[in-house]
Length: 367
Ligand code: FAD
Image 1: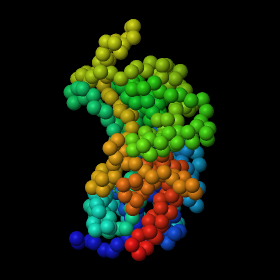
Image 2: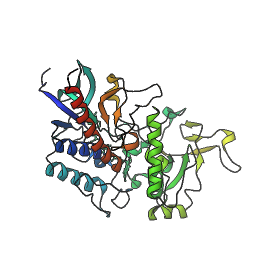
Image 3: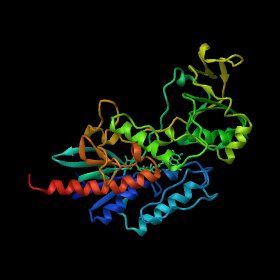
Image 4: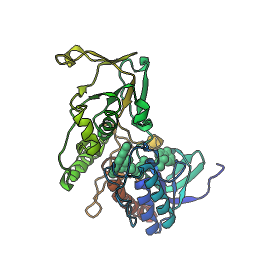
């Protein structure tokens, strides 16, 4: 193998919040590692967020270890967070290499072989921190391929200006859908459909946050695919969305349609209420239907359980975050399931570094 160099004690894949936190703690513990990141520059998924998302709009970006987060402001999140990550990587001497896209990880004689578009490496342990941004999810609906209009996913949202004068259908019940409706309702004609009744909340306190994380943690412990933490925290309206609410956009929500036709979407007769048309013509469909964990490169390791998710071991008494794969304790998943938020990714980074140290110590004991 051309670029096979040496055996690392650990390799971190991904340099978002979770990967940077893991690398910081690995450095502190003196564990030799490299961080392989597929993006062209620092910033993790934040470099790809749409231009209108400001630091005042985000739910709150948590601090990195020994690196306070930038505060709320009207500045663009896709500039502020990448600049902060870039400084952080330099200040803490984190060994990040980019762009390096990992294509697979497999077992090779007790070591892990990490293949990428820029070479192959061997490592004793792995911290996977690849987030979800690269796996946008669009549900399969009958007729989706026949639609003559345009379709976007949150991943490619071009900004409200693009939709001026077009009739837009927003699909999804999460925070992104609510924000898009907030931006679109004042400038164009919008319709909203969701699969489930959205959960609105008045206040979001720490107890509610803990409950949400615990719920996702239970799903992962049971081997189910993780739900997004926001999907269980509920949605709040910020000032810019109150204007959309005043225009009535959130009240006109309808359940999911039955099929997509060339010129619009059609509901089953029993899903329409009196006065509601069974067919709505639309020019654009905006799928705000979320993301899935970007973990296909781990498939050769066979980490998935029968229920579709990658089960994680429960946390320990002193480190409560779950990060270690049940089927292979050499592999830690951070920013996955219960730790898929900036605060969770941060904590998981520490848990993963400690688990890596434990794993290396156990492996060096005589059999
Ligand atoms: P990411 O930031 O996605 O970083 C993953 C990195 O891994 C990327 O740099 C990527 O290039 C790299 N990568 C992926 N695959 C590979 C591969 N095969 N090889 C090499 N590198 C790879 N959470 C909050 O806590 N607060 C918020 O305000 C908030 N707002 C959000 C807004 C939106 C629109 C979305 C979609 C999510 C938001 N989240 C928010 C959730 C948020 O994305 C996560 O909390 C956090 O930023 C994810 O960090 P991460 O380190 O897990 O992953």
